Image 1 (tube, helix red, strand yellow):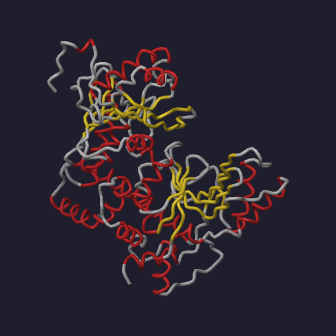
Image 2 (cartoon, rainbow, N blue to C red; image 1 turned 180 degrees about the vertical axis):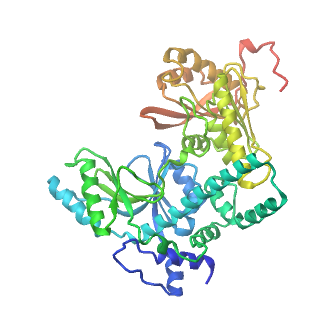
Image 3 (cartoon, rainbow, N blue to C red; image 1 turned 30 degrees about the vertical axis):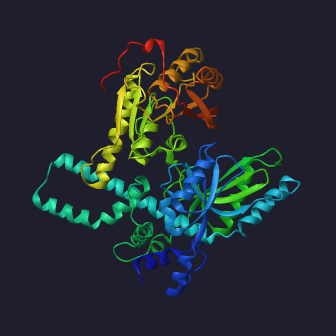
Length: 507
């Protein structure tokens, strides 16, 4: 039996209901069940970018994807071997595995009847496969956390003790050789440049679930009572119950069915099972959360007052379809979320992060440095760097040659926390004019995010000779109704009276 099959058996043989005895599986049963263990994964994505996320799933996972009528959610089917690969999707915020989906749930007339139905539903759901996937996912998270702590400890010891003696150095090399496979497994979560066969990585992770004495994870955790919590997310006006009431009664039924322990105050994300009850009008979905912290926090360590989510940055970049060797500029980069996401995913392009605020440029530079350092620690070698630079400049007078930029992607000031609505009436036309100068006529494109839609529409109306609006994506940014505009640069060459007799900078 291969390592993958042996490791998979440990999880397939695992039964989280401690009142029941696990039934051993023969080798043929393990192979058959592991090959056919497919589950439905749900993901929350930035509202408005559901289609972008669905396209990424089809492209990277080769899986069909369905967009939910509940905005900001997509669903797709995967085999268990693709679970780690799912965590590498750049467009998703949170992940959950679906236990059961009711597309047209028939709610009873009274609250008491509805809540009683929820209680009875807990014992009828197919929990087995989703719980196995949750266990595998928990193993990934534990290994990731363990590896991070080990790396931090090793770095601290190296700083305190210098190079150390030769014997310790030789021992360190041996440990590194033994942990190479584990390191690559964890890297796949955050670094899409690692292209090893994902099924092999999952097999290595599952095999490592055994400790040095050969005891399985099930045997190690069997005496402990599983902790859990239930969260109800509800949307719709025709429900006769509240979200708290649904979560309370459904959670009570789960506790009675599994004999688990509810823990709402000291919830341990590493050990506890987070059950989701998502209700949108007549659609009811029961699921188990696979992430407790949104994946959009993957790149940024130095946050600013208006830091853009990495998932939204990815969606904006994907809209303009970057090609190899493209020069991509964010002239108002803030903390650098957009160019950093671009340099990570589109490494064959050159990315420039610029801002007029020295604090913002400093944050962007620190985020770039942190990402580079993290990459070097993972690879255990000196990195060649990232195709990205940060610079301070004036958005209305960019130090760039005319027609030298392929793509402009930026988050423009909303006039709320940064800037003002009044200032935007002068800023937006000046920005669009300067962007049209540096952007290549005919092929250049721009993706611009703003909540000040009235001001932007007015500014764009006076730029019809150089910019053509192709598409608008409506998004929700922290409760604000915003828009992402995809613009195409017209073939007309840039001509401005103030540019006559002015020489381009030599760079």
